[in-house]
Every structure is written in structure tokens, then in C-alpha cells.
Image (cartoon, rainbow, N blue to C red; front, side, top):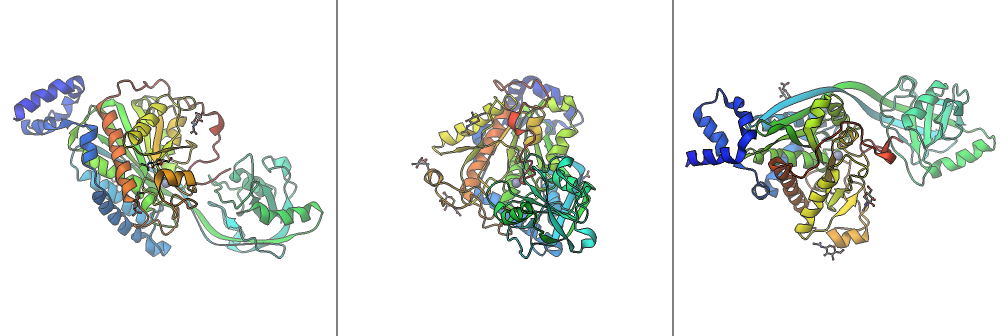
Length: 505
Ligand SMILES: *[C@@H]1O[C@H](CO)[C@@H](O)[C@H](O)[C@H]1NC(C)=O
Ligand SMILES: *[C@@H]1O[C@H](CO)[C@@H](O)[C@H](O)[C@H]1NC(C)=O
Ligand SMILES: *[C@@H]1O[C@H](CO)[C@@H](O)[C@H](O)[C@H]1NC(C)=O
Ligand SMILES: *[C@@H]1O[C@H](CO)[C@@H](O)[C@H](O)[C@H]1NC(C)=O
Ligand SMILES: [Zn+2]
């Protein structure tokens, strides 16, 4: 039987197999037989290898890894820098390494800034604004001690130095809008402010990140529009509002690691790439976000080893997604133009098992994204439709690791099951679950644990991931060729309101 398989394989594989022959130069004949005996991957067979119980077994392992974070954080977490994240990276790396020589496995280390707020307090006049929270990546107040000073209203939206009077010894009150929170904090710091408060220019509470640290940043809070309103009124009437601010926090630079696994087989100039993020937020174990996506990739990568591929398949587990897409940004930023052009598309798999799920497809169109994004979008929607399932389109607005890819000319897309969005009545009709609740009621919280997974959605979506891998691993016939590694013309998405899960603007 083996010989006929071998000749069949050569017939089917043609040139792309021949170009791989040097890999096997030193291999024995029996190894060549083994390599050639594999069938070409098909969507059906790869999908058939996916089972919810295997995914859930992996989730149990991941949860116990998150518990390694308890020593430092007092609860399970896989945030970058924690033992939970180091354990996650080890688990992914060793799982792929144990698959033998099907993949070339590599680590990519890069510097990342991490912050942790231990304690914070803001008082405006005689009130403690209930909505006040310290922004992510804020520095502490001087000496990690409370600072006192009159509140001072900054002109306009505080995006230009001329909006800031001399603020020596004062606490700046700044509207949200137009420029990143980090710019406002730095301008306040340069004007001499001892702390800053950014209030929402829309209804409701506000939270966000200062982004890349600057020596000019001062301790910065965010508050809601309604908590700010009475103080703005007083300041405009020329009244004095005494304030005090206190933040105990650290911002530090660490090294963290992306893991990349690429098939040895398949045309290395035409790669199917997919990724999920290996890290969680500090608040919890991140079993749905993005344990689900990471483990889906691990399971699909494991099952794929039973098959031959025509095109190279490259899996990525990004670190630092929750800190602002750090790992995927870094990866794309160091690709040479030549390497960039080898990636035919990037598929993002972040949160595939939300308990109150919807089947969501990023509305990635060719009109505003690299050409090919829409073909990928349609592959997803056709899958749901062919299974008699509903789906919704969601904005492709920079909240996950596809961002750097589409900004560098690589077609992108993906699926998700929902984060802190509220399920509508219509979506309850379409997907079941509970209207009025978040898709993931435990999003970025401690309860994102083993109970925070819908296995029906997870298994179905993992089959869809398998389908996407199998289809493109077989062939890119009809899929648009790469033409450019220039930034996509994303007119209203530059600069993004989001870059990652956190608001920066
Ligand atoms: C890559 O990272 C893994 C997981 O932390 C580690 O076990 C392995 O030794 C690293 N490999 C290299 C080549 O650095
Ligand atoms: C998808 O995006 C296109 C623009 O690229 C827009 O015209 C269309 O309305 C969007 N569809 C949905 C359902 O949001
Ligand atoms: C799809 O949504 C419609 C309502 O828009 C609903 O009647 C139907 O049952 C849904 N299909 C499935 C498979 O849930
Ligand atoms: C997952 O979703 C399916 C379909 O809506 C539902 O029947 C099932 O009860 C859910 N499972 C869990 C554990 O919530
Ligand atoms: Zn995520």
C-alpha cells in the first residue's frame, strides 16, 4: 500500500512537494514514506477531528496554569509578567514541541510595558466621585503619597499646549476627545500639574489607558460626565474647588514572548496565518479571553499534523494583547517587506466561547481593508449559513491582533462571540441566551473561568477555524494576490479609538 500512496502523493503534490525535498535529504526512506503517506488536508476531515471534550480538557489545564498567578496577584491570572503567563507560554511551546518535526517552532521576545495600580483615591471638593478610576499605565502620585491642590479647568479638549495655563501645584480637569489620554496627561504634566482627571465627553463612566509611558505623564484618573458636571460649573463661575489625588502604582518594562509555529511542509512563500493571544488581563484567568482562541489554535495545530498541506500554515500566540496589541504589533513591525508579502492573510481568533454568545464575523470589507479581507469574511458567513446558523457583522475597528496586519497591507478578518456588548432582543431570537446581558458577563473579570465557556459555540467555532485553515492550506486559487505592504487606507480608523481592548482616546 505504501508505494501507491507515495506515487499518488507525488502526483497530487507536484511542485510544492518537490521544493520541500531538501528538507528530507538526510531522512531515511521510511521517514519519506511517513511524510508522504499523509493525505492532503480536507475541511471535512480536519473538522471531524475537533471535539468539545478535548477543548475542555485543555481549558482545565489552562485554568490550573492561571492559578500559578495566585502568589503575586491573590487570584488566578495569566497577565504578562505573571507566573500564569509564563506557564501558558511553556504549555503552548511544549505542546507544539511534542508534535515532533511537523512544525518549526520559534519564540519571539520583545519588551513590554506593564502597569499595576495597587490603590487610588480621588476627592473633588468634598466629594469622592463614584466613577473615578486610575487609568491604566498611570504613574503614581509623587512619592506614592496624596497630592493636594486646586482643581483647574483645561480649555477646549486639552490637545494642545496652549489649552493649559500654568498648572503648578494644581490638579488638571480635562475633557475627553480628539487626542489620546496619554497626550492630555503629558501636556498636564508639562504645565506643572500634580495630577490630572479626564472626564467623559459622552454619557457614562470612562476608563482607558495612557498608552506608551512618557516621563511627562502625571497620575491620571478618569471620571464620568455627570461626576464632572457640578465641578465644571463651579470652576466656570470662578469658584475654588480643592482636590486631592492619590495613586500607588508601578509602570515597568519587562520582556515577554510570542510563540510562532510554522509547518515545514507547504509553500513557504504563500502562508496562511492565524493567531490568538496567550495573555489575560490582571483581573482574572482569561479562560474565554483568550484561552478559548489560544486553545482552539493548539487543538487545530495538533490535528493538522495528520495531514499534508500545500500552503504553509503559521500559527501565532501573541503576548501583551491586553496591554495594547503589543505582541502582534511587534511581530508585524519587524517583518521585512519580503516576509510581509509571504503572508497571504491573517485570521484573528479572540474569544470564541462566550457564555451568552452570538456568532460574530468582523465586517472586514475590501473597500476599506486590504483586498482579500472580504473573501475571508465571506468564507465565515458561508460556513454559518450552510449550517443553518445566524451570524452578525461586528465592526473591524482595531480591538484585536488583526490591527497591525491590515495596517501593513495584509488581508485580515476573524470571528468572535462577544465581549462586554449587550445582547439585543433580536440577537436573543437569533442565538438564544439572554437579551440585556453582556455576551461575556465575565469579560476581563475574575469569573472568566471554566464556567465561562459555552462548549457548543466553542466547538462549532473551532470547526470553523479548522475549515479556514484547511481551505487555505489546500489552495489560494481565486484568493487575491498580495500587492502591497503599505498601510491600508483605513480612512476613519486612523488613529483608532481602540488599539486593543482599552480605550486610548
Ligand atoms: C521558548 O520558550 C519556551 C517557553 O517559555 C521555552 O521552554 C523554550 O526553551 C524557549 N526556546 C528558546 C529557543 O528560547
Ligand atoms: C460593513 O462595512 C461596509 C463598509 O466597508 C459598510 O458599508 C456596511 O454597512 C457594513 N455592514 C454592516 C452590517 O455593518
Ligand atoms: C435565526 O434567527 C431567526 C430570527 O431572526 C430565528 O427565528 C431562527 O430560529 C434562528 N435560527 C437558529 C438556528 O437559531
Ligand atoms: C450553550 O449554548 C447552547 C445553544 O444556545 C445552549 O443550548 C447550551 O445550554 C449552552 N451551554 C451552556 C453550558 O451554557
Ligand atoms: Zn482578547
